[in-house]
Image (cartoon, rainbow, N blue to C red):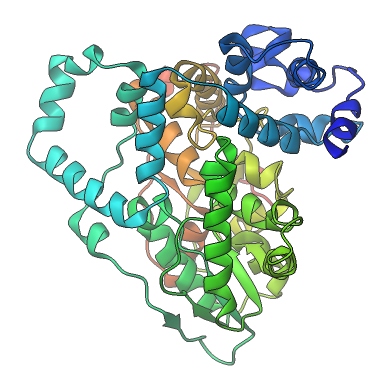
Length: 447
């Protein structure tokens, strides 16, 4: 069977070990890709039962896909961990607390309408002074770690963000080069509306007629990555149906995790006779916004200077899942005045990993602290990140250190350049930066 073939692809060479964040954290074989594959093999062959301990090793995997990039044998670990998590969810009974918390997360995060309601309460929580009081008095420490993490990740949100609606159509500036549809996302749509606004403006400025199909919901990425496969496929079918209703040249996504999942619809629905071909046609059109803009050809819109030293964070599902690395950098380098600085060991995960930082908060913070330390060593004035979860998690860890760093999606930075507006930047205090190096000279500017 296909699953046996995938498991047997692993030859236990160990190339994955230094690339695995959890192995790097604990040095535990069962918390490495090859160790988890051994557990999968044992479950498949009936040699070990699915105990809470075994399930915990799968839960502790970030699903960052760094091992997929590193593996010389081409092991499809991404498929293996996804299928194994689905089996865990179908057959393993979690504790009542876990079930309630996971149920709450998946009742809210994939549903933008509900997220807006939550956003209204969060706005009241912040503006009333209750948030300050709760944090100042230490009441949060009485809550379980995952609820503390959920509160700490609360983004700043304004009333205008909650009321904002995307237009159904934005005309191209000048002769149209393409007609594209944009996936609005869930968390992105509610808590990072500026990313979608910037995406629409940049695409239009570069000569694209932009459509935002009404009634679109979640793509199913968060559900699939957590083993909720049936729920995820329901979301996938509904989204495909929405985008089928209007002819378009490409389907644009500006969230790394969602983009990787959208491109995988063709595999996920391959055995469904009613949807296999429809999924293939849809996935063939999916392009990350960075990928699409670079492939579109010579820039049409003028880039105005932005004088900033920018560190680019490689989101895992962009770099490893979609193999998109050069395109965001190329867009940032096209902006006059930008000095692009690379993070040491930059393709290591930040610890966000979809819902991972909610379900495994201690591990997420341990992984994230390494990322934040590496970012600080670059002395950035601005962080570029193409995934909302990464942005929230990294900024939370900065705040925990009593520091701050402005973050923006590459398309937001490009939009600011095209419109000729400034971007607020800030530089962390040198005294708080481990192993700080002097700011890069103009020789470090990409080119």
